Image 1: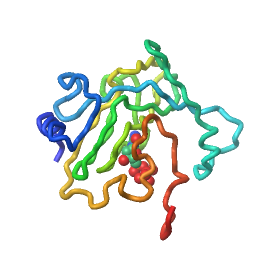
Image 2: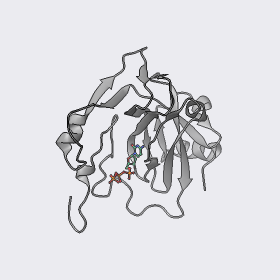
Image 3: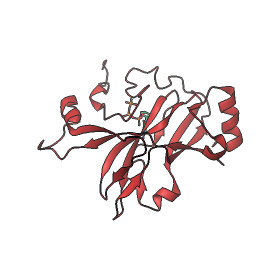
Length: 195
Ligand SMILES: Nc1ccn([C@H]2C[C@H](O)[C@@H](COP(=O)(O)OP(=O)(O)OP(=O)(O)O)O2)c(=O)n1
């Protein structure tokens, strides 16, 4: 079952679902979702001389990305074909009986802005800011302003709460992330062993 505005408000009041800061619930809470704002930190990918990125090489992944922090009142220009990691301004805590989906907003989709390339799922138990996989599929640069409502989160109730919520599992690599986080696939658990 997908939560409606009334369900979302009830869960927020109960305190097990957390979205903070929720400065203006009247604006941010939609009929069956919550709009999340864009933070000011971005990870941009370098046009490097590395012949290829090996996902298992932490060093290559780190060399590949560079952080930009947009100053107060300034914009981040996302050029056609660009792919950057952004972050939500809000921090969330998803309780064990909910799963959250990161979705785009139609108004930005109509400008060819995509907020998640592939991964759009926030696990039961996840806590932290959400990393946005931002791209511009259009033909014109688009100015993104920190603080603008960039994405929306929907919530689905699980039939039974997760027995091993994210964060309690070994290998919950993105728990408590505080800004855009590059891939930590090097931290994947090996089958049949510890990570
Ligand atoms: N666009 C997204 C999608 C997810 N997440 C966060 C919330 C998820 O609970 C967490 C892990 O997502 P996945 O399970 O899709 O990622 P992995 O399988 O790579 O990570 P892990 O091995 O830690 O489960 O990352 C995020 O910040 N931004």
